[in-house]
Length: 412
Ligand SMILES: [Zn+2]
Picture: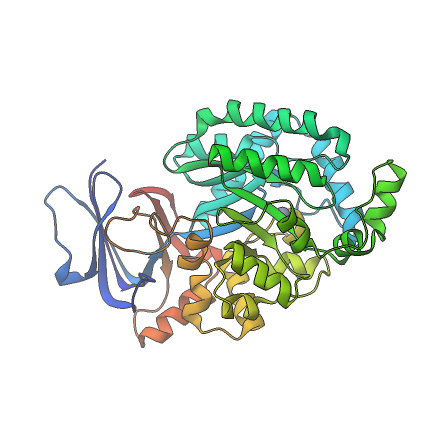
């Protein structure tokens, strides 16, 4: 690959203030060599030059929660009640063949790239997303899901997960990582949580969990009642012991929380839960659009940020939110927690990368990090604060080019 020198009216590195008339130099190894004002970034004889007079160069966006294997399901799950919606998704997935999942994952990844998203943290159980990431030269973490609410399912569920992890490892690389995801407290037994947490620890695998999302989940763990408890009774699954616990406390008790764990949603959480997340150094994927769509309520985002938790925004799947718009999620986060434009944008860049443990790889434009850049059309004139506001206000269609490791994966 030839080195690339990108220049634009603005460079917004997210590791410092916006730079007017700036440039980014990406070396032949795909890593950033220099970032700064035009005059401070070297011009190499062999570099390919691209210039955008009315745009900003920003770090490639980082989406902390997707289900790209569900691409195409946007209008197919209209159920209002969350447990019924979950059942509907399961039925839709059962109708898809492996080749359909791969086609969906490829299409979903292309949509992400076209919207300036360069890194995805994806959960799924088809294995299609890590394959799509590998073949596209993408960046991300594919967390392989495991299910099994009945304690008797533990050996089979765990063995199945371990087998899939072994098979899928061939797609993993420096930029495409494999993780595991014990799905959610209403689909995973206490024993399976503990066993998967132990396995992830031993193998050094990152972990993602849907956690404290619905009131029905809290009812199940707290009072052994509600729609999930009713469904468990019908299936002969033993209910959680009483007195109950909050979902966050439940996972903590089974060794699931930790620095390499990403807790997705975390809506039903009080001060004690936030303290547990802080103490265990667990990161949070905040999905305001999905939380609103399913009527879960609003996550205590301001409390998360005040407590110093690592937080990124995520879109969740098209089956929840219709269309993926990560900066729309950042704007919703801003409205929810009263954030500055810079702080909101960080939830889709720097903060999101830190939440995934990738802060030294992506999320900012800085020397040594991967040359992952999104070029977003914005007005050239105005103050630095206006440039930040314009980027945050932009739509997926405003992206001119997306580059991963110096290689353009999308051009408008
Ligand atoms: Zn999800």
